Image (cartoon, rainbow, N blue to C red; front, side, top):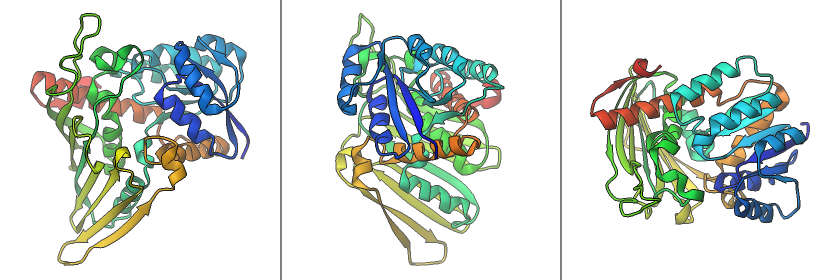
Length: 360
């Protein structure tokens, strides 16, 4: 594999996680950082434990022409403008989810990059969590027959504190069902191998951030929801989200039911300290269960808050660069995950089911 030089635009929590995981790779290195918040830059430099060029403006970073890859890990609402500038580089791009805060911006980016020479990859880490990856592999291999129903539960902590509190407001994030849940809508599309046609969701802001005030404004982001997604091939998927359940043993739980059996797994909460998961398959007409233990290396757990997935995502990303192959998670995947999230937000607001064709 050729040696790959990364520059990271956005040195917050995810920027730091990328640094920690790239450090575990043999043929890659972070060569530059960019952020307009000096404390964040300083924190990431401490993580790197070496001095590298830093920039406060991504346009100055681009002029320096130091990198093969740009990671975009800035606040959601900044993605579209930064990407309009970064695509002039022709470099490979790893864009943190959500791709953009609105479907309109995603479509604009798609049009601007029709003939883009570099790899464009939407960072959907949840595909690469070891128990989730094995869950997907088993479903796609036909282990439970033909998938009919898919459910995903995430019971977790509230949104973390971010610089300038940008993630407390719908206009900056696209809404919780875009910002947080595009991961799950991507998983639904990937697992079902189909496209969403209808979304119905019920949700609200019932516990979190109710007494917070930022410049006279109160946060307006959903903290819990049920979302049902109907797919073209007849499979139904369900999301159960709660962001005031931080004392959960499992942060994510997944269940797939086919015509021959059922498969379940979970991802331990980062706070639980657990590093292994059970993958359980139970077939109809049987009293037994096939249980597989999935253990994640402690070094990968220590490198971030996504159960080792960021490391495996980078391995796949670098493989695609070196093989000159298509991205496993494309710009189109990122766009469609945002579309489902936007439909879910609209469904909550208007209390009705939303057809994807209304937005697309």
